[in-house]
Image (tube, rainbow, N blue to C red; front, side):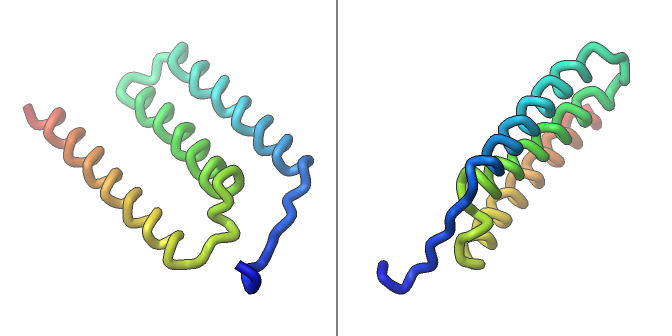
Length: 94
């Protein structure tokens, strides 16, 4: 524990991230009111992905973690993306 680097994140950064998350939440709600056809779900998922990235990077301090932890998170998200793609392909070709 003594040789770990400590990082101090200013509260101002957390406030900016919170505001960005709130804006993205309202945008993801607003996109459902726009008639985009099949792109509505893709747009909502894009907003959700950006929000997930912000939460992981700043609130969960992934920005300051070791590289192998970041690679494990990327691996989990890759499995998640493959699952979503397979699900959409199954839905598309039924």
